[in-house]
Amino acid sequence: MASEKREFQAEVSRLLEIVAHSLYSEKEIFLRELISNASDACDKLRYLSLTEPALIAGDAEFKVTIQPDKGQHLLTISDNGVGMSRDEMIGNLGTIARSGTAAFVSKLSGDEKKDVGLIGKFGVGFYSAFMVSKEVEVISKRTGEEIAHRWVSDGKGEFTIDETTRATRGTTITLHLNEAGEEFAEPLRIKEIVKKYSDHIALPVVLVEDGKEETLNAASALWMRSKSEITAEQYKEFYHHVAHAFDDPWLTLHNKAEGALEYATLLFVPGTKPYDLFQPERKNQVKLYVRRVFITDDAQELLPPYLRFLRGIVDSEDLPLNVSREMLQHNPVLARMRTQITKRVLTELTKKAKDDPEAFITFSENFGAVLKEGIYEDRENQSEILPLARFRSTAGDALTSLDEYVARMKPGQEAIYTIAGENLDALKRSPQLEGFRARGIEVLLLTDPVDEFWMPALGKYQEKEFKSVTRGSADLDKIAPEDKKDETPEAPASDVASLIAVLKLALGDAVKDVRSSKRLTDSAVCLVADDNDMDMHLERLLRQHKQLNADSKRILEINPKHSLIAGLVALAGKSGASDSLSDFAWILLDQARLLEGETLPNPNDFAKRLSSVLARGLSA
Image (cartoon, rainbow, N blue to C red; front, side, top):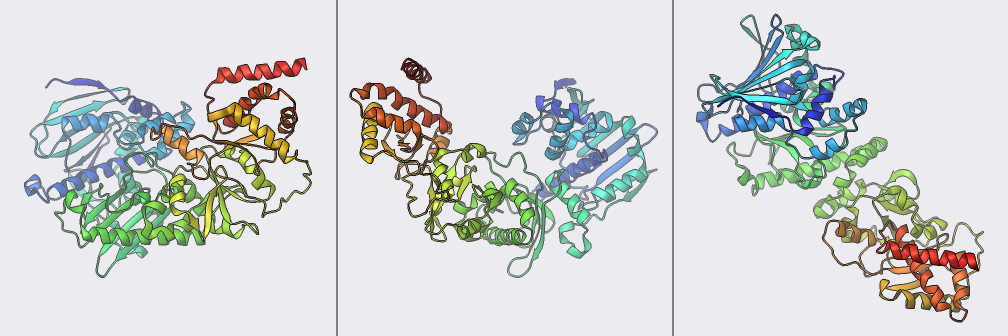
């Protein structure tokens, strides 16, 4: 097949533009990434060989080989792993085939300094080679195939691919070092880097120098070592390797279970939020090993979905080496491991929340919304997850727990009050909060969509009912206002009832009801859902995701103490007022809709009515 020239995927081109201009302050990181990729390729072939031993016949000792050539300004990294076919080379080296890429690229601003930090968190793996290279050449032969392929690029938008020869399976990456990369052709520099970043790799990393081979790493599974033998730096570098991440872990969980089940876990909570955390696939990315042999990084039965932020490995002594992914779905051993590991993780998070509450805030901001999925997905561990949930509230800027909220409840307060929405600042300005704020009643500000699902399912916490301030009537009479200076008189109830009757007649089926409000103190109007109807924010969420077509009719509440409503009450008492009040009725409804952040159903009618009312006011 003739040589073929192709362009990089658009996202790759944007990344490479920044990578080429010194993405990381420590360029040596590229070698860690290439060794990590080579190790993964060997792990994959080791797993395939469990059912097809012929794949590694004659070459069963996996290793990564590094060979510098200072005179030619070359550095070569080879492995005898699974290798790549032509299509795999195009897919793996020309695109970023991972969830969250689109969301990630959309965050790139074009400001190189800002984008460097973002890309560092995202991780670019193979592409880091272009920091130190003017050209990168990859030769790979997929195991079981006869033909090898060669991929070449200077990282400036295009690559070429053609057929070539390679005696054995695996991949060889040759870096044509640029001036900034010349130091990485020095054997001593390579030894230093491998010891620093790749000592934990569980297969030999070999340096070839003057025809002699030297193994540079310990080549043993880090997770099987005693905790006392492992430094914080080694844990961190293992996290970088297993997670293909560039941040530092927020929490490290290293444990060995012995007894009825024997397995080792080395799990990490990342220090930053991965970009694919809320992708529809919702997959965990913890690797499963059996007796130090890599099995899969797609064992979704290993952890519940709400712990998908975890990275690391689980190594079982009890599962069979030839376990297939299909067998994993119904394996009782794996099910029991999942139960134990989940409880262990929740116990460690609880301990961290107690011992270091300030650090736990970082975890909550990154992963709190994901963890809360477990409240309705995992009834067995619900009582352990609930105390870990954190919320914004009207009590201040700090995150709060449900226990802390309950401890602050006012005398006479019988419910845990909530309000849900997408924007925190908009929630804080919501008119529905006014009566609660006046009485010093704390309201939880829910901006995580998941809260709309677990909270109704749970119903209560410590026998206190969850109650949305935008739904149902607000019975606040049992709690006295903190500010007793507000002596604004209300119009007589009969006069207010007359206005309400006129508003109902004008609005007809556009609203479910019109009533006097107990929750408003400053605003003239607001919309609320009826007791038996869906909460307004949940309805908007479902409409956005096309899971709901019809809109529920809302209740329009008016504030009898507001000067505008008082004026309308007076106007309603005059003969022939119904016609002039009709425009006011619709303007009030549209005003309430705007306060909810909703789009007006007919902006032209709103503008006409507003112009008419303003004109009448000017001529009065």
